[in-house]
Amino acid sequence: MRKRLFLLLLAVSLVLTGCVPNNSGKFESALKLFGAGDYPEAAEAFEKLGDYATAPTYAAYSRGLVFYDQGQYSAAEPYFAQTREFMYGEERYQYCHGIALLEAAQYAEAAETFQRMGEFEDAPLQAQYALACAAEEVKDYENALYLYEAAGELHDAQDRLLNLQGQLYNRAIALKAEGNYALAMKLFTMLGDYLSAADQAIECKEVGLEQQYADAEAREAAGDAQGAFELFLALSGYRDAADRAQTLADQLGIEIKSGDDLY
Image: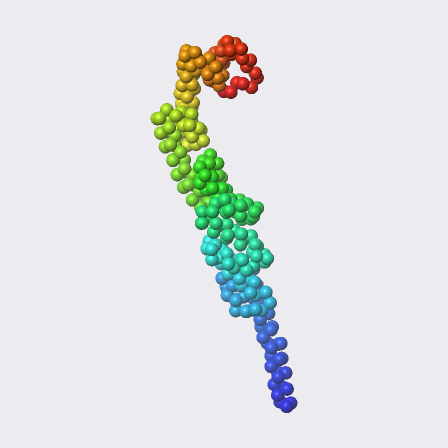
């Protein structure tokens, strides 16, 4: 009986003086690896500790960081889902989720996700990129151009920017050839200094104004004083359009008020 009791006490003593201090030391070593940024080694060290203390949390977070630093966000997401309340687990989980939404072409949802993250890492740029993709998708090209440029070198933002610029430029050239100078001018103006867009915009504006002026003259000659007046008024500032609008206004008994100059 005494022998059995002795053996039992010896076993307990070994647990208390051997296993627990050993786990404690291994845990401290794992923490040092984690603090040094050696996440692969830290993950393995924490995983070997099983359920000891907070080892499972550190193990999952470390494993998530390994994938995160490699850009494997879909692989990292489940680990941060387990550690959302630990360190930056919530932010990293949201970041991985935002990337997943981008890859699924759910641009509006991705933008909202990144915007909620504030200034965390490059979340603002990710939001810009997602908003640019969303804008292009709904043909809001002006905003898409601006946002792709704002996104800088992120993902394929520059390739998308150049591709969109090329498409819009070609469309504007075609519209100009068709005689749709107003819409062509709008697109060229939107493109800023892309290729010859600025010069093309000026040319379209001049030709468009001349066409409108000729149309106003044609309406006046055809007896459409009201139509001619409205066109000349809209052209106020171009050639003698303001004077001709005033002459027609006098004939029609119309008082031109301040602010009616639309050009």
